[in-house]
Each structure stands twice: as structure tokens, then as C-alpha cells.
Length: 402
Image 1: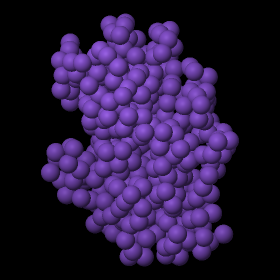
Image 2 (image 1 turned 135 degrees about the vertical axis):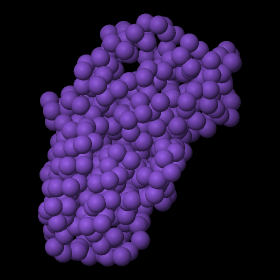
Image 3 (image 1 turned 45 degrees about the vertical axis):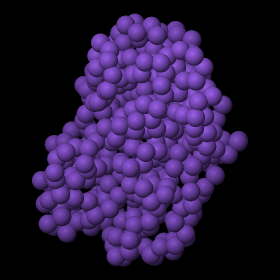
Image 4 (image 1 turned 90 degrees about the horizontal axis):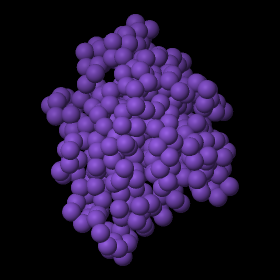
């Protein structure tokens, strides 16, 4: 990835990261889940205290150490990065990180714009085969959407690596497919990305909703089934919210990618807010939905105390959080760093070495805790807003380059 300061003017476009269909357990007009106890002070309960402790930890940041050692750079390699959509910052950022890292390690690199279209993903994979690339990085492109071209790539000897992507054997899809990836980033604690979303990231987003409403969260949740990542996010958020005996999901808002690119998202969220004047939380899951309509709906509602939760901490979203204009919080993980970690992971695969933890965790970004150097979330930052870890230099040292 070229050195990148996510440019806000280019970011109001499509996104390739979308949101899960909610499997709700409760009772309301649209299959929403909730609990029966919404009265009384719950802030002294064990579950509330645990949520508060988790948010305090998230405020400090949970990144761990990056790998200290590894194989020197493989030589003469060529990698193609299949980005879900180069116009969407959630896709463009990790792809740019991988591009920058591939150049740093001395490999040839080509970023292919998938334009949020599985037929384009397939075209990119087959172009990589024709170009005799050594490896593919799938950036928010799931195996199930490209099974046949991936089979062709593996037959041609290409290694396959995933960033924010899920293999064909991921249990949440219930496809019963076989694994086709050679590797993907391991998060802090050696967790797979799926496990991390299920047990850490999604529940932390829920804990923010719980603590910001003092245990009385009334949530409007966006849902979509296009990508596996969003299904894991929703699974984690919903499981985290379940412990709150006085919280509930009052409305689910099914969305599609066409809603985002067609400008229908604001209308849908505004309708949900009108229908549910008691709602005090919007769970948008990922930042692009906030840029493409959720944020505008939240501002137009003019509802004091309304909380809007996103994910990545992209530059325009950090600005929205700073100005209080339609987004309240984000959590990471560091998307640019994930691109560098993917190149390190591929280098280990080329050397026949096992995967190691990237050390990537999360950190709460809200109006009181903002990254400033850089102005987007690039990993845990200190009290001044400066990112703490110089992972670029760390990886170059491991690889023996530059």
C-alpha cells in the first residue's frame, strides 16, 4: 500500500463490507430480540460491571506485540490483491496496506478492483493466474463467492490468503465446503478472525451500547447477508447484548448493497427511528454504512443521546465522531496494518513456516479518544492520539529489507 491518508472525498462510495441477517430471539413487530426487565438500576449488576470493565480495557487498547522474528523475504514473488471495492474505504485500506508492504518486501504487486461484483472477483483471480502470480490476497472476498476460480488458482499453484475474508468451510455459512485458503491473519491471542469477531469484537460493541445507555439500550440493528464477516459481527454483538437484562433490539433493518449505492439507506434508517422513538442505539456494524446514510439519518432525527456504533475508524468517520455528526464510536481493528500482516503471513507460507499472531486487537474511538497521527485508526494510539507501534519498521526488520 502506498502511504495513505484515507481521503474523505473519495470515501462516500460503495462498500464491500456488509451486515448480517439478525437471528433474533425476542418478540416485537419485526422479529426483534429483547428482555422483559427494563426498569430499575442495573449498573451494580455483575454483567453491567463486566461490560464496563471491558470498555475500560478497550479504551486503553488491546493490541499485543507484533511478531519478533520470522523468515527473511522470499525473492522474486508476485502477488495479486483482489480488493472487494477500491472505491470503498473498508476495502481499499487493507488492500493499500498489502500493496505498500509487498513493495517494501520487494515483490511485484497488482491490486485488482472487484467493484463489489463476484464476477469481477473471478475476473481478477483468473487474471492473476494468466499473469503467473505466486499468490492471491482476497480482501473482503469470501471463498463461497469465488469457489470455481479459486479452484483454478490452486490448481495453477497459487497460494491463497485472506484479509477479512472467510474460507469455504466457515461454519456460519453452513455450506459444508472444503477449505481453500492457505492462510489468513490471526488476531491477538492466536484467535482466528471469525472467533475474534464472535467472542471479542462484536461483544465489545455491545458492551459500548450497554454502558452508554446505563443498561437500557434500545437498539436498531442493520442486517445483511452478503458477506460472512457481517454475520460474525452480528453474532458477536447479539451474544454480547443478551447478558443485558434490560436491553433489547427493537427493530432490525434489512439492507442490501443496492440500498447503499442507490441512496436508500438514510430513508430506511429514518423510518425505523420514526417508528421507534424509544430507540437510543443504532448498530451500523461498519463505517461505510454510516457514511452512506446512517449518519445522515441519525443527525436528521435530532434525538439527544442517540448512539451510533461503527467499526473501522476510517478517516471521515473519525471526523464524524470528533464533530458529533452521526457517529459515536468505532473500534478498529487496524485495517492498514492488516495488509502488512497479510504479506508477512504469505512470506511465512512461502518459507514453509507456521502462522503466528499478528498482535492486532482493538481500541475504542469516541469523542474523548481520537487518533490524530495518523487521522485514522492504525492501531493503538496514546493519549496524544499518536499511533504507538511502528509496525512498518518492525516487519522490514523481520524480512531483512530496507
